[in-house]
Length: 153
Image 1: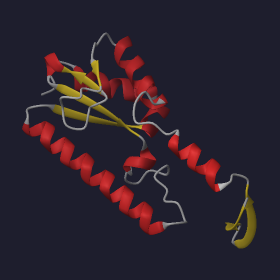
Image 2: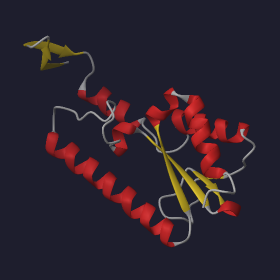
Image 3: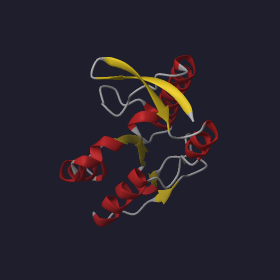
């Protein structure tokens, strides 16, 4: 168990972390990049709208989550924490190892931008769906339908 200091109601207090460093490492290792809950929920929405897609195309930069080859459209489903959704409450930064996390998050943002630029240069339209957008399924459904419709360029 690790003893940590936490701020609670404006007062610092010592709190025991109920997870050992090894257990925390296992938890973080269990975070995957494919078939996440948000991604599966978006796939179900898109499928219910009648659209068909390919998953994780390894021949494209960034291995997009959903690929609509005939439409030249791609959807990425990003977690707000890992991909740093600007202004989102879920994009919090851990208090410990700040330099490590800032470096990691910065690399993720740079990679996402590079990937999107490469795909657009190849003629693909790219949509990013953020994890927090799954809170309002009606609004997200409209956004997905608008993006995937033939009228959207």
